[in-house]
Length: 594
Image (cartoon, rainbow, N blue to C red; front, side):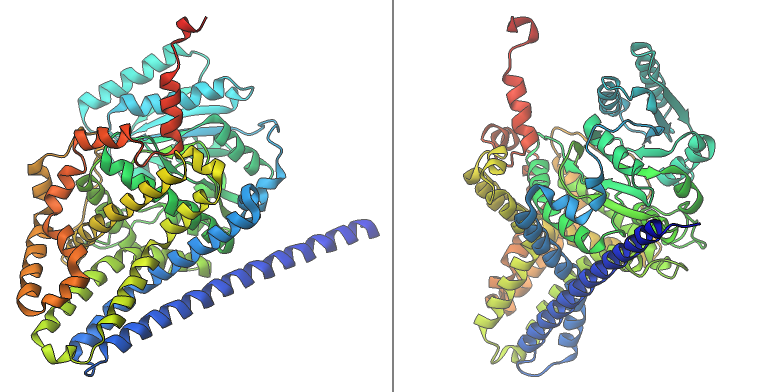
């Protein structure tokens, strides 16, 4: 028989759950209204500008393309604004506000669960990957919980020489630490790509583990971060996935340093803001994420899409779909929305970055066929749509530019159009696009101690300004590459799953030209068109024209060893890990300390 005290306790729990649910619904409604209003106002402003002289079919098409760019822009704006507000209001407790489960642990709880740390590989250089994985294993070996972790190298390598190096590396690792459990398994076929490799591991060994932690070949995680994730999951049976915020590792190339500096600041505010309203329906980026094994194995195995087209077959972008399936199974997907010892390497050149984007683009476009999966949460469908829309925005932007340039053949359409209005709208759109980065930089500048980790406020401002200029050059080049690829998808052209280029000294001219010649041809042609017909439009188009016309030298110069060394020596784009690494390098060797 239930006592009055127990009934009262249960009632309070139900009321508390109802209050949390109402709060989350309010947050989501607020974000929805803010985004709808933003998209409407931006669309209305562009429609007003184009309507001078009356709207013709080209301008209607421009408005349609423009509308496709707005949802992603708006969601980035509001996520970053909310993230900055949370950071300033709650400080170091902001991550706990958006993910209350983080407040359930003190940090010294025993680890009672079994965890598999898995690293899928395919034709990667195994030495640096093993070094990263061994770092985590050795750190965990220094704790009382080493026996709770097993390490699994899951090889899809089909290059015999690399496979031999993998086997030798694992054998040497085992000899160096006989106490550790290190397993190596190599598949004969790359069925299902990375997701298929993990699925095969779960079929074979998943029942032995409560959680598993997938790492990419370029992932780095520290023991403290991993133990924190495990402790939160142990006391939170409602969570199926707990994603850590992933930041870039120290790099030596100018391109990578600039890219990850901007990405770090953009992601910090963006992720915190999105976690505020996404709550239990958060992101999965496919690595550096702790996953509850049994429900994942039961509910998150990916379907093979029927047919023979570019959007059929094995799913390339598995991560966000797995999050949607975990949420459909009734478990929460949460994010640790703060920086920790969870990192990855970023592409070393613009050409390598574009290649990676094309593969992700192909995978995200497959979500078109998955939006109607039965039983998905409404927010999960929104997230799949946004994953699609993120890449649709690039060709929509290019189409808008091409259609706008074609208006030069209809000069009467420009009569009466106020230049000041157009410049104001252009500036507004530019600022809104930069808002995630601006809000992230503002977080740093608002805290003197945090700014010191980046070299001080002056260094942050200088690096932030240079990174924005670099990103303004990169964005059109990437967008045009994505546009060509998406047109190719219509004709069933797709990408495969090959090893990524993670390290290079520099990008050679011939390789840059082989990837970026379409951007160059288009940029020069568009420049000539505008110079002849509407030279005043160069005011708006100059950044894009420079980027596209000089795409090849831009890609080569941003990997120049001399420029890269200069950026390192002067602390340009420094992140805290750079400064920590420099401080450690300055220490005398242990033998000299005595």
